[in-house]
Length: 112
Image (tube, rainbow, N blue to C red):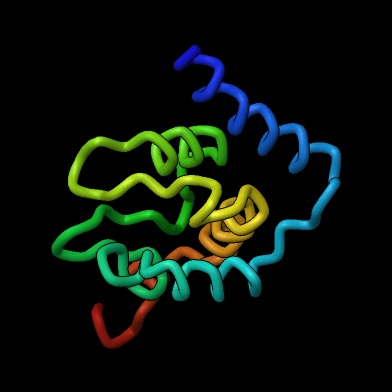
């Protein structure tokens, strides 16, 4: 029973995202990221902070993030679908994917 509760939300998120049943929006994801307090531990652009790891650029795959966010038992509290919808989770992932990589230090004249 536990495995069904664990797998079902991930499967739904993957199916919805792959079928385009809803369009994950980076702008809506940024709003959900701030609204749900992700920035408090992970920084406003997912750069990481004193309490949370770096999330962007190049976030983990959506199914990995969903599994972790829903079922974490570490210092981060789990976020159920009542708190963070599948759509908001997919949009947050889209926001994190939209964050560009930093410039290489060698390409910044003042650093060379």
